[in-house]
Structure formats: structure tokens, C-alpha cells
Length: 263
Length: 304
Ligand SMILES: Nc1ncnc2c1ncn2[C@@H]1O[C@H](COP(=O)(O)OP(=O)(O)OP(=O)(O)O)[C@@H](O)[C@H]1O
Ligand SMILES: [Mg+2]
Image 1: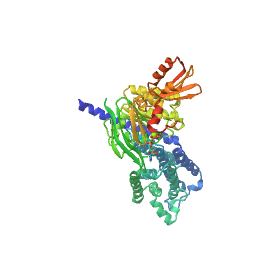
Image 2: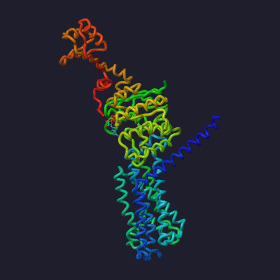
Image 3: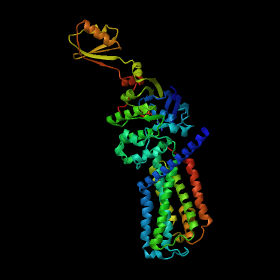
Image 4: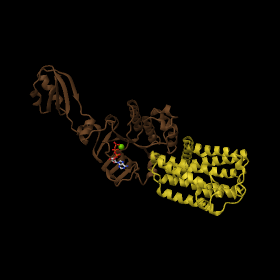
């Protein structure tokens, strides 16, 4: 009898934990949306930029040394990276460092759920918002302005997953190292601009001086851009950018886990 | 009754400061156990060690038969905690918080009932960041109870609540206790301690000064009774000072103030009757828990 009872009991504990995690993810997604940083700067801002750039005829000229892609074609993946970078490097660390500063993580420590799961929930929430945003950007660029989808979709999805993993783990690293919410936001913002530069936000990578191009390939957003560009041209991305992204993802996660403080 | 919380020789120091020097206490099942002490006495540090949020430097703690650090996961299911400084995300709404937290527990309480009981019903849709201090406090109490814990630790139960909310909270706590929940509460309010607590531990400078019932503590402090009255006819001091029960006589205008032990009142009224003096406006001032506290710890509680 006791053996028979044990099975449903264990099953219900698992189900409960599952539902608690799911509720936590839903709650964190709602909070991320209410917080406005992600939706406004991460989604709204690049979307408006995309639409504005889409109506500038000069940007429909092909970029030299970019395999026939136009300036506007290149802006689509740049803005996808813009979205990922805002969510992962400013929204995520600001929220999590705030949770630590305000004792939210400590409060969760006294519940059966524990604070680690709220980290997971935040990661999932930001990941989901990024996914929706990427689909939205691709749709607007495609339906509104006739930009073709990446010609190697599998390669694109893989690059996108690696780029989000790399950026989210950088976000976790910022959270781990920043002493508080204010510094976390500051570090994220200060890193954002040079990283976006190397993704080609202001000057396409192909037109950068040799040295900057080389540096760009070793930055997370530069590597992400390189991989995206190759998939737009119909190739599976080359090993170098994929390995660079994977290295960032693994390295930053290890350091973040090692140094993470709950209070 | 079995012990639910057992603390032996707890010692905890922060970098440069010993917060808890040596605390031992036992909390029995079903009782409301109060922890009283001046600011910085080590109350929060002690209860945070009991809740498993801090690792003691020395000493043993057992809660529900579990080690708060080693058996964290299991303990959290039976232990509800209200932290002195515990917070929620600013944008999370009251009902959302309660619903979310209740999903963390195997057998949660009805969170809507708690919402009612703590007078938060009309704030259900308000974001945590927009609540007043007292409302945040009430939500924090609700969250400590939402998992139907067997033991609840409440740090500064009613600090920041208005008198009505305080009384309502006391009623709620009495209700919770009547369901057999053991409650440890840290408090600064003597009235609260006297009304709610079965036993109290007085903590001062990181040590337990005394553990007793509220009445026992008052008695232990041996505070003298003070009797004030206006004699109907002039009264010579020596009639009173000669009584062994009386330790002092002072006068303020026409009022005579006699201090003495528990039997002083009897002795004084007997003497007055024998001299056909009526004691007008007779008042007896009982020793309060607050005075006992001051005497036993040699300090004064903050007025908050
Ligand atoms: N995180 C900490 N780091 C260093 N010292 C601390 C820390 N927390 C508390 N202390 C010190 O330890 C001592 C005991 O603090 P504790 O918070 O336990 O007191 P308390 O009895 O709860 O006081 P109160 O009535 O003000 O809440 C205090 O002197 C305090 O300054
Ligand atoms: Mg305290």
C-alpha cells in the first residue's frame, strides 16, 4: 500500500514543481513586459528604426564586399542583435540585480522553490520576448519591405540560439559581478554601445578597417553578425563565429555561476 | 508537548561584531513564543539562523526535527517566514504574489481568505511597489502563512501597522495558532507580547536574559507596587514607613505615594482603616512588562 501511495505522491510533487516553475515563468514574463525596458528599448525602438530605414531608398544599394546584400538587408540582423543585446545585457541584469538588492532572492530562499528558479524564469522570459521580437522583425522586413528570409534557415536558427545563449550568459555575468542594481544597469549600457558598433550598427562590418574587422569577429555581436550574414547568403555559418559564440556562452556561464551571490 | 524548535548555544559573528553571543531556547508545539529585546540585540540574526538563512558559527539548531541548513528543501515546506527586510518585485500585484507563492507549497492555505483576513482585499490588484508600508507588512505576513506552515517565524509582526490593523493581525495570529501552528514572533510591543505570547525570551547583547511567561517575567523583575491616594484627614508618614511591607513614602501636593511589595496595599488599607482615614482617589500602579523589560535588560525599548 505504501509503495502504491508513494508513486502518486512523487508524481504530484513533480507536477507541483512543474506548475510552480511555469507560474514563475509567466509571472516573470508579465513583470518583464510591465517593466517596459525590454518592450520599449528592446523591441519598440529597433522596430521603429527598422521601419524608418526601410523607407530610405539610399539603403537599398548593395554594400561593397557583402555578397550582394543591401545596407537595409544587413540592418535586419543588426536590429535582431540589438534586441537580444538590450534584453540580455540591460533588462536581465537590471532586474536580477534589483531582485538581489531588494531581498526578492532572499525571500524566495525561505520557500521550497528557492531563488535559482527565478533566474531560470527571467532567462526564459527574456528569451521568449526575444523570440517573438525576432519573428516580428523578420515578418515586418519581409512583408513590409521585401527582404528575403535567411537563405539557410537552419543555420540562422542555430546562430540565433548561440547568440542568445552568449548574450544571456553575459547578462548573468554582469548580474553576478555588479554590486547592485544601479551598477548592473550602468555596466550593461556601457558595454552595449561598443558591442553594437562591432555588430555594424553604424558602419557595416565589411566597410570597417582591417583591424576593426578582426576585433569585431571576436566580439559576441560581431561573431553573431558574421554568422547571420553567411546564412542570409545561403551558407551554413562557418566554424569561427559559432565557436566564438559558444565560447562566450560557456565561459561567461561558468564565471557567473562561480561568482553569483544571492544576497 | 514535544519541542518544535531547539536552539543550543547559538553563536554568530559578522566580520567585526558578535551579533549572537550565546542563545539557547526551546519552543514547544502549538505555542506562541515571543522574542523581545532592544535594537541590535541579535533577534533577527537568531531567527534567521533558525530559518536557515544564515549559518551559525557555533551551536546546534533543530526545527521540526530538521537541520535548517542541511535539510533546507524539506524545512521550507513546513516553515513560513516573515523577514524583517523581505521584498517582492515592485510591479508584482498583491493577488499575483499570493497566488504565485501558494503554488510553491504542497498544501497551501486559501490565499483569498488570507487576503480578506489581513484587510488587503481591495488592494488585490495593486502593485507591491505602490503599497503603503503597513500594507507591505500585511502582505508579508500573508506570504509567511500561505503555505499552511506548521511553524511560522514572524520578525517584527506588527511594526508599521496602525492600531486597528495591529489588532486585526493579532486576531489573525490567534486564529492561526488555534489551528495548531507554532509561532515565533519577534516584537517590540509589550502589549502584543502580553496579549499573544505564551512564553517570552528576553534577549540582550546576544544573550538570553530570561525565558518565562509574560506574568512570570513581570514578577521576576520584582518591581515594587506603587499606591497613590489622597487621605481624607492629615496622615503622619511614620504610620506608613513603620510597616515592613512599605519601602517608601513620598508626597505630591495632597497625594501620598507609597511604594512597597505585593502585600503593601493590604497593610496600608489596614492602617488607614484603623485610623479612620479614607483613601480617596486610590490608584494602584502595577508593574508592567515594559518596566520588567527595562529592569531585566537595563535598557529601554525604542518607541517604534
Ligand atoms: N549583515 C550584517 N553584517 C554585519 N553586522 C550585522 C549584520 N546584520 C546585523 N548586524 C549586527 O548584528 C547585531 C545584531 O543585529 P540584529 O539584526 O540581529 O538585531 P535585532 O535584535 O534584530 O535588532 P532590531 O530590533 O533593530 O531589529 C547588530 O549590532 C547589527 O549591527
Ligand atoms: Mg531585527
